[in-house]
Image 1 (spheres, rainbow, N blue to C red):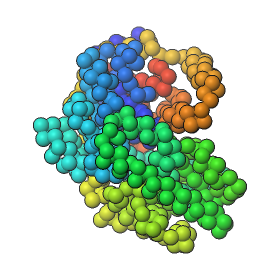
Image 2 (spheres, rainbow, N blue to C red):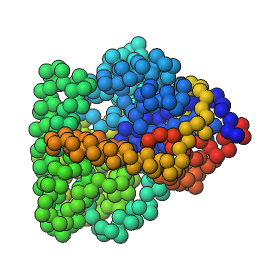
Image 3 (cartoon, rainbow, N blue to C red):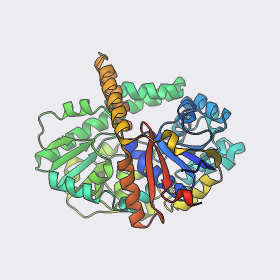
Image 4 (tube, rainbow, N blue to C red):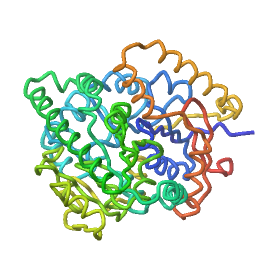
Length: 453
């Protein structure tokens, strides 16, 4: 009989699976190893959490204006919130970062904010001195996964990609402001960022820059492919993959592909081409041949240090040459001028979360879902979703719905278990960790000998 013990409880939100899941699962597993109740899954609200557990520390991925009602509702019911920033490393400007991610009305609600670097902490502390104890320059666990090449988790998949595609260059697209402009604009409008005229002017100027860069990246990809080099053009999760495929119609040596996480594609590639993209940062820490392409010396962001940490080129001819020259890294620039903390210690993140713990009872037998039931539930969900999509006539709306779904597609417990087994075999975990589904894209993470304490 399972014990229904009162223990510290944690729930990790995942918004974009390919960006957030594995790093958050790593921290979740380290907490579960201590015997706590740990969950990971879809973005949480009180209504969804109340079905699972009475209280918990909720680890969110950002603090935006749209989160105010959600945060206040959770807090009023006894939940605590920690904001482990996922989007605060590559930013257009500090004002934009604060306007979108850390507005005054919501920044006070979480118990702590885990930030990517000291510059973000410095700026937030100067704006909100009364909240200075909430800001932690602790870094993001994704950096540990990059530096350790995901502990070998993607080696097999990377080898499979190499066998399928042979030698290729990976171009990382990050131009949703243009390729999926309605979706992005609506998202920014929900934050209230565009309510101010200066912000609206800056946004409209940015759309023009992004349009220019996207079209230049199209030209570059086409010329590279015509030089006999295979190109994998990788859309950002927020982009319209349909539009991008249309723009490459007729180019057989270019494949637009958003399958898998980007990590195995980086590992399998000959070179990675980007402009102010987190994928370029990831490639650098994986020690892959990384090239920042800045046509006319233009960057996606004003804070463009990420373009300077490896190779930088401004024209297509030099870009093609750099594909076959040795990697170059500038170690002095790796911290992005203090916007990126590079000495990440996973146990420090775990300890900091433990200081914001809330205790709750949880009985696994009440919510554990059988495999057959989960398969049926997922089938019915996907089928009904396709039916709703069919009824949407507007093409733009169809693209937006597809982009939202692709952020966190249906996931199985076995997929998470594979990664947990990998980091146990690597030695990151000292005890085996298991996960079971307790809802759609929601999982309970626990150590196998949890009943022994």
